[in-house]
Image (cartoon, rainbow, N blue to C red; front, side):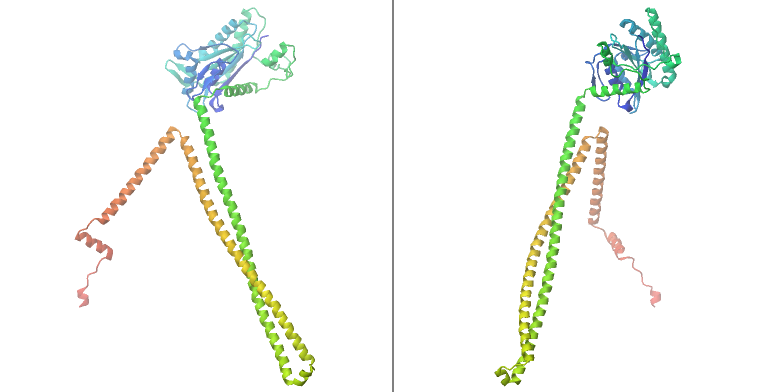
Length: 485
């Protein structure tokens, strides 16, 4: 049965779309976009029965060429977010034959759209199927013999869409009645018509084909049509246009260039990262060597203190042993007979024992001194080795720093080179002008310096020498003879 469906959308650059790509997709043809250099080839698309262009009488002849028409539309728009065209999509009554459907659509478009001054590019889709429909792409600027003029803002009013919907109802019902069919369509909502039932859910071509084969689709419509259905359909068509759009040679070269530049930047940055990591390892090694050197230094200082303490201790024990032996010798001198007979007192025996003990303690202290001196020598040797290692690591770290600096400079130079490679012609011209201005300034500055040096070397006359001497020594005051007398 005949159904009413009419939707409209605006194709805008702000969403990444173009009228050239939209026209090529809906007409199933190949068009080159002169603005972007891309070729949109949809010649293999199925479902397009025919297309034609309808235009006002005073429009130039080239509007009937879709490729030139929509390239001119794109040229007329300068803004990056410009609205380039409008598309209207409406369902054709499947009770009519394809010829009747085309005649109905052409008559309706001429009356409702072309009569207002629009150029309409009409594409008929799926006329032999259960979903015959028509896509109409409309210009948004007034057109005359000289081409496109100003935009007509009145065409954006909601009232225009309402008139189109009502006009389509009138034309379609008149055609159905003339063809002897009882079916009719109504542009009003079910609520406005007084019909109490849920709106049917639209079934796409795949679901309709399943029903023909006796398969019940899982997603039959029992829900109200969402208000965003037209918006979602527009998004899907835009996605298909972008995915199916073939890439031009320039686009492929640009992608290859970007890929090459990315690989070069990653390789250059890897060198910087490796140099930085190597430098950090060197610094950590130098830090560890420094800590070990400090430990060896402390060990050497402790060994030195221990050796000095042992020397003092040795001197003390030797002095004590001498003192005790002097006591024994004095007793022996006073008591030679008792000493000969071996009768010694407790004090003498104690002094002898103390002298012997002092000698043994002095020997132990001497052993400690020798050990401390050996530890000191070992610490000094270790400090010397660690110092050599620290110098080696420091020199390596300086070399790594130079390597890292050079790698960072190379990376920065690579980025600048890539930026220059991606310059637009205007940026290239601006850079050349700036370079020329810098060279001119440098040349003028050098000339001034040379002139100043030559002026100082030039021979001077007596008056100039006197003035120069006067300037160098200052003014000479004349004596006041009257005051001196």
